[in-house]
Structures are given as structure tokens and as C-alpha cells.
Length: 423
Length: 117
Ligand SMILES: Cc1cc2nc3c(=O)[nH]c(=O)nc-3n(C[C@H](O)[C@H](O)[C@H](O)COP(=O)(O)OP(=O)(O)OC[C@H]3O[C@@H](n4cnc5c(N)ncnc54)[C@H](O)[C@@H]3O)c2cc1C
Image: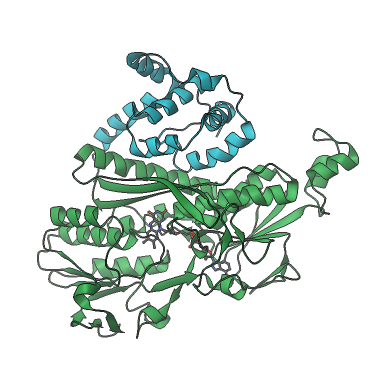
């Protein structure tokens, strides 16, 4: 049995934080939680476990990057409404204020029998509980002819940071009459409304520069998409004639993608773009596959009551890598799942209370400056999955003040969630 | 860009509407404070702390969304009941409030009244 606070108290009769408690609580006898990935899921889980365990659990966060640039609000950065710095965050507070050991390394494998994580720079790190939140990797089978080597020519910008910067540089370099060609991903992928918010923000940039001849063509493998009515009404209203969205009933299927030439073949015709933005299909972050936690879908099955992996009791999978039932893959969802996971990790190791899992998501999207829309839902655990219990969505034809208030609320959310992740 | 001063005025009005003192005025204007029976429930602080995770991901002294830390319990309960009854209209908050039972509102109210950021 692991020595936890309750057994410690029982053994030594220390009810309040006794004289010996602080030095022992920080010592080698503590259980260790290792978190892989310092993004929306991982940073939140690490912070909540450390904050609520108050020193009684050692928390190690493995993340190669020293600074994390969020994908959320990266479209606003493309649109010129946010600076790169304002969407980039440091791990310093997690280390200094929460006592989390932040290891800047890449996890290369998980030895589940020995309960150790192998990293590319240093000794394996042992764990009592492991939380995995590595986000997504790409499945290039969905984009014939296009692979990782083409990311410089035709950025996906579906991972935050350098890719986002590159896409913005290419967007800002366009001249009137040059066109944007976008290939959006099949389901499931991170941030269902994300590609269409991106279309809106790119259109905003072209319009602000007074361009009248440039077009944005979207080749979509899906027959419909998130908040479609709201987006298409917005494109008509703000960017008339600029955006052309083509579903599979028009293009008939996406064929070879030539990033060098900027040409995408479809069953219907060949399309050319001066700026090519290709977002491939997605699967769980590679480490989840290496750890043997994924199923045939490429994502990880979890227990909907706790986010515990269906294949290993000592491991939790949260965020984009998990199969979270009705929840979309979003930063908000990952943050919400992290809190359910953190509660169960603490209960496992410290016998703290368990409560029924409650999950929540809201996705905001900006269609034009001061015109924000939102879709959101609550979720709970059913016998089979995380199921939706209620939902809401912005309505067509809302007045300007409602839309502006929705945008302001999204700005508040961004400040709050990043503080919730990074302290 | 957003008109900053206009946004600030609207923002602070909305924020003020959530703050304890101004809320008192607001509530009197709308009639009595609601949810008295919920105030009689002893809120479970640990449960409140867990549930609060869902709130603080948005609520943090912003221009549109106020902080809930050190929030007066009476006004917290009143606000949640008003969202449930459709007397207050924010679609997000109405959806969230309708998911909460009396025990949960009591737990949250008890937690936030005591918790500092
Ligand atoms: C353009 C765009 C817009 C978006 N807008 C929104 C929005 O408005 N609202 C919203 O809620 N969501 C939004 N999202 C979605 C959101 O970014 C993701 O759903 C969220 O980040 C998922 O969290 P995660 O923890 O699963 O992964 P991530 O946040 O991607 O974090 C994963 C981390 O794991 C690290 N990692 C990966 N592998 C390893 C390894 N082997 N070892 C160590 N570390 C590793 C990575 O470096 C990364 O830091 C958007 C996404 C995009 C692309």
C-alpha cells in the first residue's frame, strides 16, 4: 500500500499538519504523478493535482517546449487581432509557484510494467499514476501526396507556434488577385469550427487590405461543418463573393496534393492556390500509440466516469488523444477533462473524495471584428460514453451588441483558461 | 477593432451587475432575492471546489465575465435561480444553471464565498 496522507496520519497520529509533516510530505515517500504534454489538458491536470494535493504528491510535467503557444486564438493572431506574445505562455509559474518539476524533454516510450516514462534527454521517470495529453498527430492517408515534409511549403498550422507564424507570413505576403486554397480535415479533428474561423480571419485580412480580386476556396471532405449556417451567413455579410466552400457533393473527393505547385486535384477539377493551407486528418499524439493505449480509431478509449485509460488502470488519457464521446476536441474540453482526471488521481493516491464527473465545453468563433458566435454543451458519464446532457448555440440574426458581447466573453475566457492552465 | 471605451462602459456595467453591492440593487429592482431554500442547505465545500473548476475556466475578473471569488452566497444563489427561471438571459449561464441541482448550487455558493483567488 502506498503511504498517503490518511495512512500517514493513522500511523503517526498526526491530525493537523504536525511538526514532522512538512518535511516528510515533500520527501521521497510521496507518490509521483507524471504528466506527458504541457498543453490544454496536461498543464491543467498538473496544476490541479499539485494545487489540491498541497505538496503531498510529486508532480512531474514532461514537455519539450519551454513556451506554449495556444492554438486557441491563433486565428485571431492570423487576423491581426492578437500578438504572438499574447498567445504564448511560460511554464515558470507551474515550476515556481506550484512546485511542479517541469522536464523539457520528449517522451519516447512508456514502460507500463515498470511504470516508467522514457525520455529523449535523461533517465526514465517512474510514476505511480501517468496522465497523457499529447494532443494530435497527423494521419497523412487523408491527404495523398502531402506529408510532414510539405509543412514548410503548405503549412497546416494545426499545431501552435512556428506553423502559425509561417501561415501568417504567407497570408500577409499575398497580393490582390492571389488566392488561398484550403483543404480541411475529415472528422474527428481538433476544434471543429477552427478551419471556418480561420477562413473568416483570413478573409478579414484580405478585406482590410482592400483586396477585391483574391478568393478563398475551401475543399472540404465533409458534407457539413460546425456552425455552418452562422459562418456562411457571416461570409455573405462581411466578405461577399470572397469565400467559396465546396463540399464532397461538388468536388467529388480530394485527390493528389502537390504542395510545390500549389495544386489540389479532385474528382471534379484541379484547384490552384498561391497560398495552400492543408489540414490533414488526425489521430492521438504518437506517444499514446507507442504506449499501446490507442484502438483501431487511432485514439484512446477511456472510462467516461474518470478519463482513466480503458487498457491501463494507472494511466489517464485526456484532451484530443482521448475518445471523449460527444465532446468535441477542444482546449475547453481538454481543460474540463483534466479536472475530472485530477480529482481521480488524487483520490487514487490520497483517498480524497470522488464526485460524479461533470464535463463542459464552449467553443467561440470570431466571424468578423466584434462579431462572435458560440456553441456549448454540458456532458456527463453514461454507461458507454461521455454523453451530452444539454447544449446551446448562437442564433442567426442576433443583434450587433449580442455578438460583440459574445466576442468580449471569449476574450475573458482566453485570459481565464490560460491562467487556469499556467497559473 | 473593438471600440475600447464603449466596451469598457458596457463591460463595467455588466461586471457591476454581478458584484455584490450592485447586485443588491439589481435584485431589489427585480423583486425579492430568490433561492432562500437553497441557502438552508449546508454546502459541501469539497464538492464546491470540484464543481468550481467548470466556472473558473471563464470567470476571472474580465470585461464581460466577473470573478466569483469571495462572492456573496445570497447573491450567488439568487443569480443561479434567476438563470434557471429565465429571468436572466445569458444563454451560456442559463444552460449551465439548468444542469445544477440545489445541492450543487449550495456547494458552489459555499465554496466561492470562502475562496480567494
Ligand atoms: C486553429 C485552431 C483554433 C483553435 N481554437 C480553439 C478555441 O477557440 N477553443 C478551444 O477550446 N480549442 C481550440 N482549439 C483546439 C485546442 O487547441 C486543442 O483541442 C487543445 O489544445 C487540446 O489539448 P491537448 O492537451 O489535448 O493538446 P495540446 O494542447 O496540443 O498539448 C499537447 C502538448 O503535448 C506535447 N507533447 C506531444 N507529444 C509529446 C511527447 N511525446 N512528450 C512530451 N510532450 C509531448 C506537445 O508539445 C504539446 O505541448 C483550436 C485548435 C486550432 C488548431
